[in-house]
Amino acid sequence: MNINIMKRGNAISIDMQKRMRELFAAYEEKNIGKILSMFTDDISIENVALGIVAHGKEQAATEIEALFAAFPDLQLSINCYFCCGDQECVEYVINGTHSAEYMGMPATGNRVSIRGAAIAELRDGKNCRISHYHDSASILRQMRKLG
Image (cartoon, rainbow, N blue to C red; front, side, top):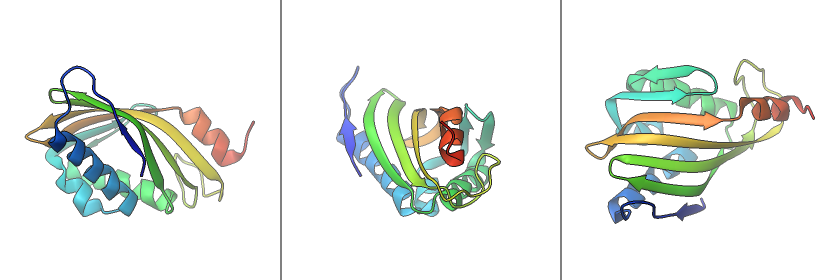
């Protein structure tokens, strides 16, 4: 996994860097238990592009499982990460093969590259709110092989 840590505002603590690396490593390992352990019980994860909000760990697990099922060979690259106080921002790229239903589209077997950004809020060292932003039209074009 490639992570470029940038400092903006307050200096990023070693603990924050470590926590972010552990979270994204857990995504690459598809370790849902580890991912959920880094969320508060009342986590709110919003996929802004799709208008989906997962409330609590159970709904978060369902959304994460759907991502892993759709892209079983998921690879994650972090282009930029910074934080200020209890807020984090990360720019990422997810690459994988569309192998199961995702965004209402049946598996196509196409390779997909999803560029996105997320803004997260922390409470007691855990994510309590995450908003993901990505270009859904680009993802659909790649899954359908549209120009």
